[in-house]
Figure 1 (spheres, rainbow, N blue to C red):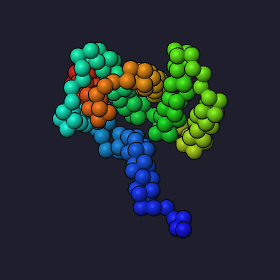
Figure 2: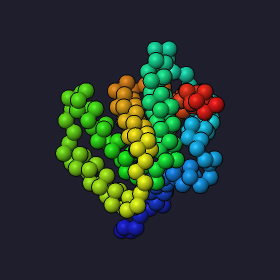
Figure 3: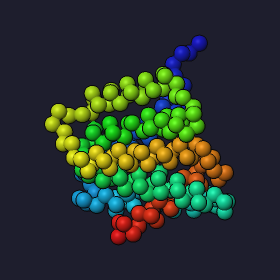
Figure 4: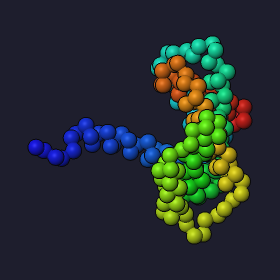
Length: 197
């Protein structure tokens, strides 16, 4: 019996590893390629084109009753989060911004516990804390600059995304996932448009 991983297993690993690699490129792209001190423009360029393409591709409209919730989720998950993410990326070393962002699972568990009275599993809390500590040990440089505005932006952005994640789980939209993501990106990008302008 052949115990070596199959081709589909390696493909799954490769595809799964692309998400953190792309996400991790945010900080290097921001500091090395994008124009300096343009966080809202960077957020707009990341959200609006992708949202437009996904909406056109999916061709699915949310129900009329879902629009208010979709607006809230687009603001939290894309508008506020992306803007604050890029403010943090411009003002903080990537490692420090990533460590602050790593508290998101704890925030989501806290929301579920306080709002739904579902106590998180001890293993999940411990894994999140160990993950944050591990990231801090790997990514925080001794001479890292602790810019208060950057740290506040990273924390508030993480809190917005945690709230959006919690509400998405609670509201469960009826549109397909691709369309739901596209509409959030498009609406969030439109929220960012006047600020970037």
